[in-house]
Amino acid sequence: MEHRGKIHRFLLRMILIMTIISFHACHKAVRTGIMIFENYEKFIDDTKLMDPREDIEYLKKTRFHKAELDSLPSLAIILHDTRIKMFLDSLNIPRKDITILETGITDMTILYVVRNKQLCFVISPGLPGSGGISTQVAEFAGMGIKKLIHIGTCGVFSDQPVDFDFIISGGCYKDGATVLLSTDNGTISYPDMSLTAEIKQKIKERTIRATTGLGFTIPIFYYQPEKLLIHLARWQYDDFLKPLYIEMEGSAVFETGRITNIKTASIVIPTDRYYLEQGALKHEFIDFDHEQLKLEALRICASLH
Image (cartoon, rainbow, N blue to C red; front, top):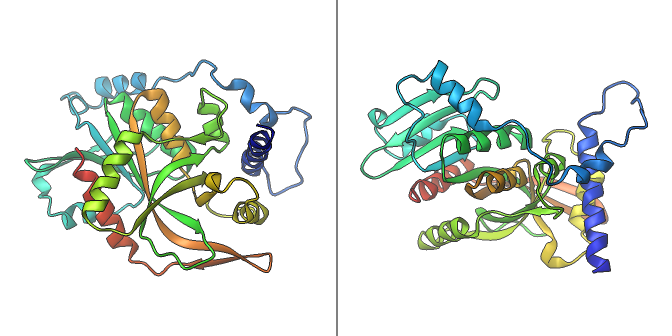
């Protein structure tokens, strides 16, 4: 238990470091003495304000008067790519079977609602980071969505060249935003296991190279702190708790799904690799056909409606 406690304290420190980075200005930092980030855990299980259902009802009254947001498909897919039409064309979905709804006011969300005899789902381009993705997931919950699958990309910690195409997430270490969403003091947010099992079965049927692992959610893409990545690559704790990859949204997807009663899961595609060489952090991009892999992930997820 003492060892687990050390892991918990280390991970919390990493979460706090990442959150603090977001607030650094280009000038000299000002210290107020207010211990904001150190107190995040005090707000766990606090009353959660801003119910997304209220915003959805407002949209129905002011912009969607023809019940466009009623009776949406039960499955939603968030794909981190702007070329949604291209991917739907690649799935041979006729344009007449696609309805486009521009629902976003603050989060610029566009929904592509697909309905035909074979497929029934709604897909939206993903917003980066915990703030954007948690807003999308919450609003999908407000629209009555029951299952949501996140398709993204990631950086992998590996001493060897990557020999798999997909990572099916087994959970993600929380960032600061996810701590505020949390209703418990655990350091990892988990996907819905039944939905994850469905994805694994579909992938197995298609003989795709895939693995399962834990992710570490970092809410920024550019200017990530090198020492944090070195700590994660070195990992001096239990091997079964070691993160396989880093990404920007996973923990927020899972935690928002949990508090809104949506089944969530995540597939991430490795785009780059981090490893240590004589103690120094090395980085290289992975030469995969990421566009084709996103299409294959979408094909699998769309079949789960």
